[in-house]
Length: 301
Image 1 (cartoon, rainbow, N blue to C red):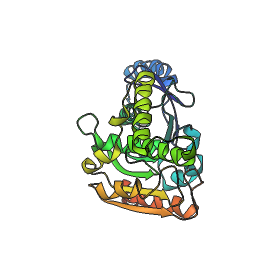
Image 2 (image 1 turned 180 degrees about the vertical axis):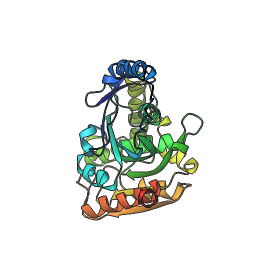
Image 3 (image 1 turned 135 degrees about the vertical axis):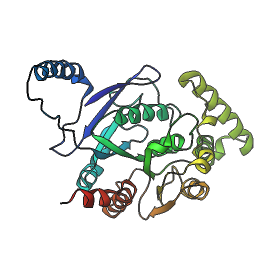
């Protein structure tokens, strides 16, 4: 496990899995490693026959990002599938989730900064070559906000993305949620629907701005979708009433600028475990993006 410091000064708790023959670096032992390396260098400098330092093997890495009210353990159903492909896997707790520091989540706004911290850390490691993203719900929205904002982040580092159940726009999502509550309590209020929605949304936005320090209006993956060019696989559940695919995943896919495809899951809702065929399809997609077949053939004798 590794602890990283974000741009906001908060600590991210991360886990990095890889094949048994690969030694993955941990920030908790970096100082000891540097001391050992220094001693080794002194010993080698006194040797008459210097030895050639063996370069660590590099592997592609898939970063998994969890949804709201979850943590990095959400990666476990996908973990064996991804490791079997020949990649390493990183999962981390967003700030405000799991064991990471922070009081609130922002459903993508600050999470994109968390992702940037992890990506920068991996690019500095000698064991990581290319990087792909796999996000669920909030994690998928984070990937879109990251990949579509080249002025702040560097999406060229990302080879492909699996985007499971992202919302299209946070304000729109709040509007739909308030609308469902209003329809279930229609007998309790005589206020016009539009007026009630407007009042509720203003109250929500003020509360979020005050408590969490961001505006929901700035969390809009569909605004960034036309600026995303990373190959993407969109996933949505047909029975998802929380983030309906017809108002979120489908418009996102239509506005997305890069190569993409959309997979609709039957007999699944927002939180249902994903079927094996979906995990297999997502892994095949990532294999193509990370060019794992080419890497395997090039390393063969």
